[in-house]
Image 1 (cartoon, one colour):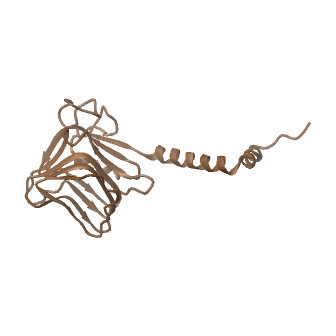
Image 2 (cartoon, rainbow, N blue to C red):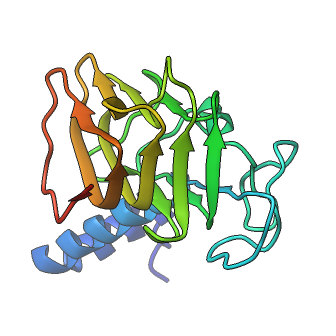
Image 3 (cartoon, helix red, strand yellow):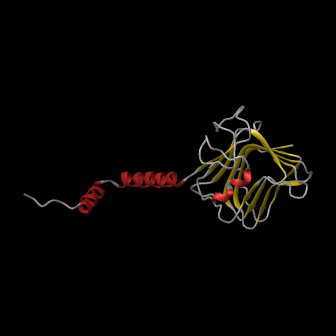
Length: 203
């Protein structure tokens, strides 16, 4: 009776029998699966479920923000999770107006070429972020962040000439997709590359 092969020897034999093309696609598949394993979806909703696209309940900052049934209420609560490559923040239908509520991203909130951090509204007519502060009217504050996508929403500041999206430090690969900017400058940039921009509507 021939000796039984050890598990490691069997695995090596299987890999040796694969042609290079099959092995290449297997590696790619495992890479994507690994990325998906560590991606997280976050949810934000206002005080109503009327017209909602993503959430099944109203927002509450006591919620985890990790499921459609437990969305956060305010925008500023999301970046405290330390956003990572491949994460998506779904901002459901509603008008988010507050003097102190906006997205502040820090050095720990970084995407990658393989997985952007995505801020996705329900649509430009459904998700409206409107700051009411005259001293700090921005909606997104990016500080040395890379590979960020902002899409499908409207940014509206009450202050003329405000920075709806402010970038500083070495922010790079900021991707703006299908958004409306009202009553303000689009960006104040410091060493920023805007990469692959589809239509931006500025009024």
